[in-house]
Image (cartoon, rainbow, N blue to C red; front, side, top):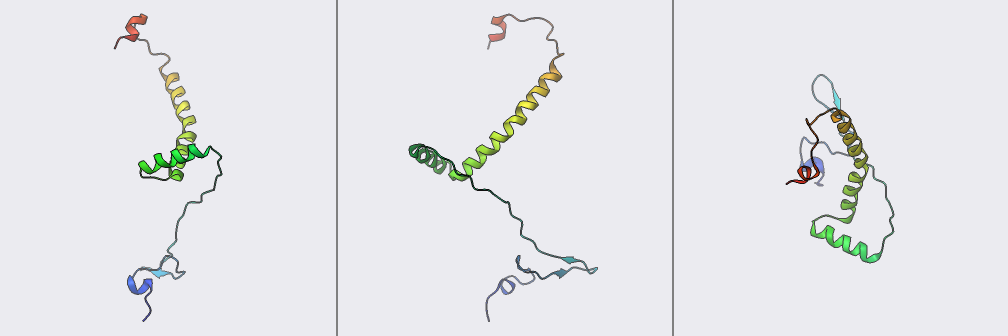
Length: 109
């Protein structure tokens, strides 16, 4: 007898199988595989810089690709942070501290 996913996991449909299963009331359910579409990007940098970046990524138990994706996420969200900061400053523009502080008072720790 050949080993298939259906034999290994009885009652579980193969994710790539076009077969539908029926669960009461005649409802049909199809299994689908969801995936993210990614685009390749080619970058140019000095060889030594790339080697150092790979070393840092390895020390962080990640890959250079994953580190780049994290950086890209932060880079694209920075505009949102600026907008949020500007909105906060607009909301606080009417806040009055009660008096003006001296430079020394502002710099006290």
